[in-house]
Length: 305
Image 1 (cartoon, rainbow, N blue to C red):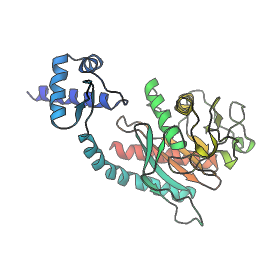
Image 2: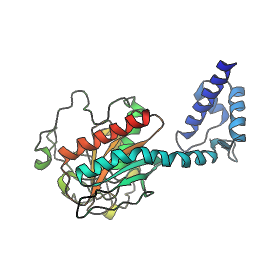
Image 3: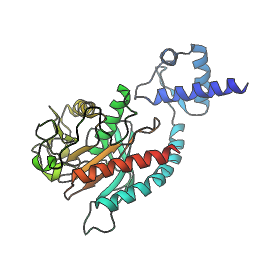
């Protein structure tokens, strides 16, 4: 009996995860096919989840997450914030820039925790709860990169580690404006947590995004952070090309003159998030990048306990 109950619970959780995967609803038949379960089993699970408010049906009979999930999410967010604060506080003090944890909510990134450095004369102020499209800013692009890693089955790559065959970047790479591939780096702009930064604060006309200091072909950004028509596709393409790279760097993506670095929080299947820093000052990518990556690893270890 206990084994049967555990199996039912496991199936129900798998169904909820499937409903949370993307914004489109699914029919019970589609759910049964994707879960590898019979339709009667899926209908029984849905009945229970609907009664508890965790699933709902639209006018066309397609199944979506229920709004009861919001209550649980709201209860978890303060716990997530509390767990992130020590790592963010240490990061902000080390690099002298505002540190933040950004979590995905659909196609947006939300800053759930923000810590400002205590010793700087000036620093960028970023409001907790700020929301931005994932296609804009280092924090959002890091989350898109994490999604691409997961899709490709690379999510086990430790945060901040190099990919097989990837060479260490020369210490003067950022200063010279080149990457390990010998191609010119395209700095970008950034502005808020969930935001990003560019190499050594050099502005790029049009606000192009530089992921891991590598130019993204075809990436378009309208003046002052307004999305170009192909923004969504360009952001996903950029994230795909840079999936699993150590960190992402942008400038002026969310606010003119703001620079940011972000790293995905890896190894937690239930969380799509990134850790990053943002500032109006200069960022030494060779120094700050690894520290952001380490903070992301520390947070992942804390949340995995």
